[in-house]
Image 1 (cartoon, rainbow, N blue to C red):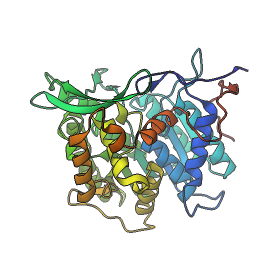
Image 2: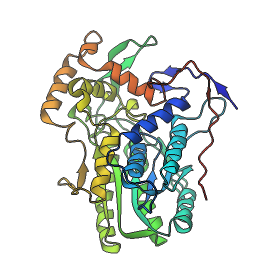
Image 3: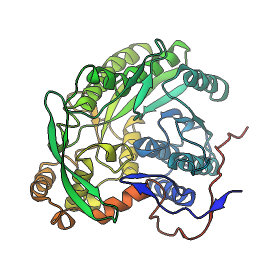
Image 4: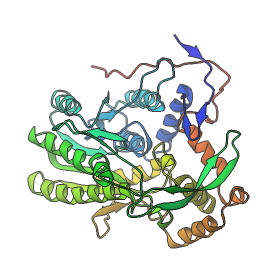
Length: 402
């Protein structure tokens, strides 16, 4: 037993500990937010969620379990409790596994490097031995700083940089007392092989490797469908995101989708798409210059009209399972971001962006919502949780039942 009081300690948007009780309750709230849930038990479709513990990958896992009744495997990379608490994703995975079991869903969670062939072998073995040797769906949602190529052993590192010239943008920070500040930051442009390195990590290479690995072992079911989760975003953030090194990786991901779609259509009557999701506060997005300011202003404009990740992923599953028509744009992308990129909303955000300063930001952005969302990523600021009470931090990784 290792019960203790967990107080939030952070450096900017990064928190040093996570709260198990808060993480668990957030997962339960996401599950309850899924409408028209599938009946408990049953032999639902077999799905593999790569990046299942955080952000859109977590939403994909919970929406798939609750809405569609999937069974299958979630893959993520989280740290166990030790001197510090476990990562928030560790506790969220434990909570997701408990809910899956309560609802009769056979869901196995694996903790390790999704880029490695060792993990691919482990997943392939489980699909063959536990899930009838077939996979119906694969959702790919990986945001990582680096990747080791299994063939060469080369380690690639992704960077957040503009392409061509330095880029100066406004960004939102909070000082040590929690006071918001709007600052200007300048990011140096990509140099050397920065673009190639970022594409090697965040592009479509590993997604395609997963499909090839499983196809070579005859594990893809007839009609197999796969989706990689992506983002385009606003013109306000385009220079550092869509037109930057990460944007080059996203373009590679989309090109990979078109290649895979043609290949899967010929081999198993399947399909591959990228799903362009809309803005949200995630552990990955808060690291991108300007994104925090943009999302806070977007919330200030739209309020509750913003669609949370769990709502977006319900829409994704509905389209992937043909519960509603699959609607793609001219590039073959499934778009869940139309509400964000609505011209009136974008103009309103742009107007606020232009006048945003440290003095005006509290009137322009929903800072209470934004800072609360950041804290909730780590299980803090969750209604109903008593943060003065000791909580068990030594939570075991979920072990699948027989």
